[in-house]
Image (tube, rainbow over all chains, first blue to last red; front, side, top):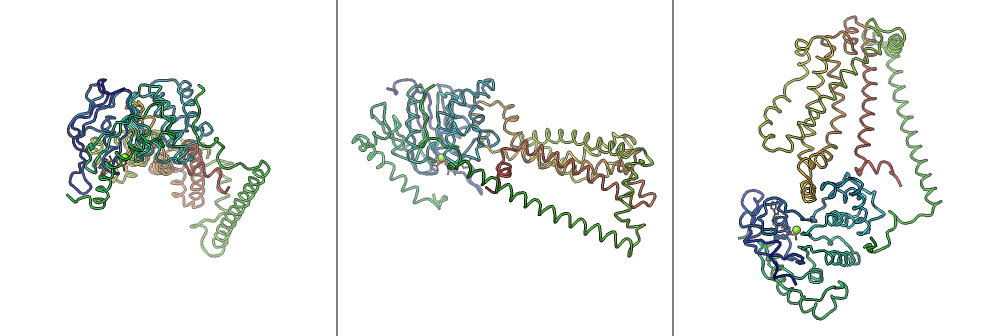
Length: 272
Length: 298
Ligand SMILES: Nc1ncnc2c1ncn2[C@@H]1O[C@H](COP(=O)(O)OP(=O)(O)OP(=O)(O)O)[C@@H](O)[C@H]1O
Ligand SMILES: [Mg+2]
């Protein structure tokens, strides 16, 4: 059980501010303390616009914290740490490359030969169920298919830290469950830590070891819930167990206040 | 690897299944209607040209003075004469060759310089800030006048013309390459960085391809500028080239000769344009509009 190992990822009093449109400063997250062990699966939930994606971008090293620090493997993050995979919330596939070449780009950047990279990529394209669409360009795919390309693109590098920003939100229920199941299978076979942002509380509980709730903007960590459901889990079956429902009720009670507060302040961002 | 694939439904091809003969008749129908549409377009074009040339010929024969305005039959005779007997300055092919050589050499140099500088400045906020007033000023200069200066500097040979072409082409390409490099989707760049791309790889595998759309669209106008630069350079003083032939025709009040020169240059420009379009279609085959062009109407 993770928790007693040295943390793989650590946020220490991390604060991130952005310049607001039309002057002023917007604090996206403040004083976030989070520590994630190797091999741990952590789900992050919180009201929309609170700062979940911002938290991921701090861990990825794409953005520096305004205050506080981020550590990966005990080293302070200044650039992109090794072994990080990041599946963005927005579409980030290369429009001028086919599905196969998009997935192959990771190994290519890391020095694999073209044939090698393509062989690796082909395997992953098939695993995410896009074998027939290898030669398609992204604009010829549906939104959900593009998400799967992004998933394959991230996983082909076999990252040790997987940052996933609402990866399955564009999929239909059945495909989503299949992808969740596959993600769990891949993750359990590796020693990767996953930070998984989602709006779907059921998904968070079904997948994660720990669910982290963020408050309405400016976000900080409100509560954490350990999910001690036995593994390996069947994402479909586990939802029906009484243990699942008990945890769900607990987590939802905590999240509801934040969602309501976010809704109340929505449309008046300058109130404060 | 025998890992299960994860798609909800068995992956069928794009679109639902059509029976083979159904698909064949559908495609044949599309092809036929495309052919008919093309035929109609070309027919109307032919009529427009015939009416235009015919009315010009008639007015020049009966109403206005063909000495000043020339007419299609005279221009045709001049073209025949140039291509069969040659001009007073050597064969017409040789003159075309000079103009094309100057235009393409200058075009190549100007394009490469424009892309390199445009992309570099587009990716460096600091450099862009430093250089932007200089570039704006240089762009505001009426550069075509430089043709005269270059003749003083480089003489009557082809180098002065190439220099004129370079300054015209450079700015056309530069601004597009600059914008293209600047408009690169930040998400895509971040994704590449996460996937392990070095700075140089990001430039060559992300920035350049995404700027390509912008750069290619500038090449159409840039080649037009290249021909104008070459012709104006020759017009200002040269021993060979279409610009010189046109200048000479003007000096001898040979209006048919001016038109003939214009027509030849136009044909060259159209050929170059089609080459550029071909290259563009090849390089941008991933673009939605490009793919749709091939299958429109189904
Ligand atoms: N680059 C930026 N510049 C300015 N403000 C930003 C920037 N990125 C994020 N923000 C602001 O920070 C806040 C948090 O954004 P973030 O994307 O982290 O939210 P989120 O929790 O991921 O929301 P969602 O669930 O809708 O994806 C938002 O109010 C947003 O406007
Ligand atoms: Mg987000």
